[in-house]
Image (cartoon, rainbow, N blue to C red; front, side, top):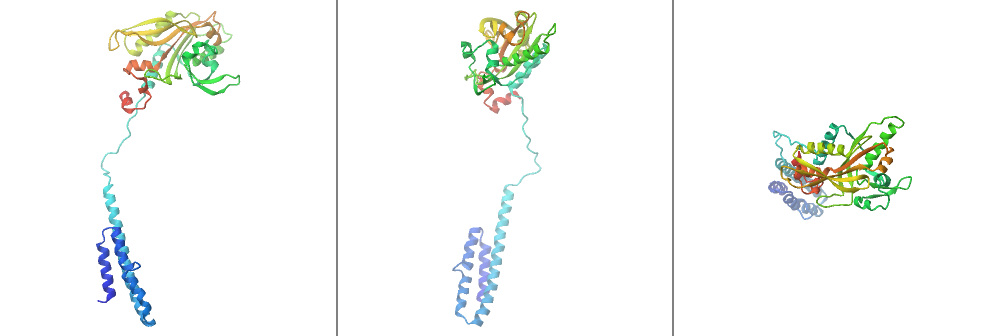
Length: 347
């Protein structure tokens, strides 16, 4: 065996014994590096005669090709082994059942809102809808709450840096009362000039906004307001409607209802509505659930109606507050934190 055959055999053995790419590169350097055995042989050709250089050079190049072939084969072998190990580590058992997406559920506030709409629909009330960005006139002035009136501080809201064509500021509605005004104006216009106008019976549920935040208040919350206007609508009707609603909502007749005198610029007289359960964990406590009253004559005028002919009542309840009582929630902020551990309870 000549020196070149021995070199090829040594290289093949070293390459086969390399278990990592780094080991293989170290073995390569011993043969093909700047100071490698084959490189030294090629450098020595300069001392030979032209004929000897030609013959010896051809033999060295042949040996070099065998060494490079062995090197490339081992490189491919290491790459194949690494890929196989990776595939085994990331292997999927295709016989296992697939992972399904979890089933979603209705948010408790949405559930509560739908329940309220269904109950009032059963009593003949329609559901109104309207924009969440309103003019100052719709949010306050049309409700007998003129500019700079101290009652506005009770409903301090968020204003938008924009005015309408008449120079009135826009704001995020602090209550859903503008929806009642819009509905009543459209109703009055529809029956204008006729001898008889059907009663206005409508609820206005939706998002509202005020500058307030604590365990029982949120800058964004939900409210439902009700309106019944006709030629012969009394406080007795208000009590009857709200009592029927609250009993249906909580699915019990074991509760009491009381009216406390209060003040709202858009109703006169005005009253807070309290309830007290006669059984259950909230027994014996009066709980405020709504504001109400007879619609102020000025508000009737702003609806496009004659206050000498039409009269009615209005009320406003916090949907979030009703949901808290129904589900036994003590902190309003839980509804809006997005914690699935809390929300999954209502699925």
